Length: 190
Image (spheres, rainbow, N blue to C red):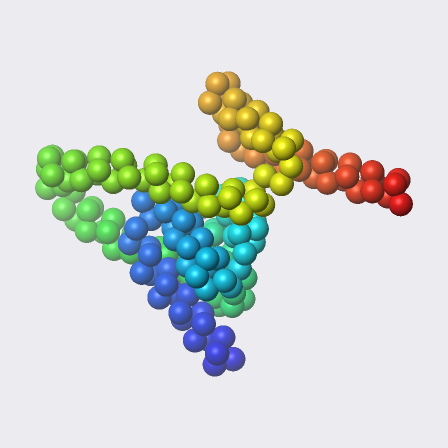
């Protein structure tokens, strides 16, 4: 029990530390988790992180809060999940409180505006890096057919402006249908 508490507290501290950098909707945190927990500590593999991110992204709420909870739960149960979420939300809460308090000073400050432009410019490569690392592991799109599904999802989202929720639900239906079809095929061959 004492070891689990220490591990859960360690999750709080980890997410508190990286929570100061949740620019890009949390994808920068996913990239950091990939480096720290998959590549360095090897406590999970790329497929597990991809599964956590996929579920966290698909659920209501903030993606990174969901991912933090799911990862914390995976590592230390409910306590780990709760402390991971508290760790990830504390820094933005502090930052937002300060920005709100001094909003009128920040709103028209040219340096703040330029700093935010710089942050936005570097967030895109960080997000692409996270996606690339997850894909490089070979588990994000296990079959060439899923590249086609990804392309269809992009077209539905960008060209036809279909709701992301509907695109995700269609992806879920396709994935489940594909799995059932493969099981049926394997059973017929056996």
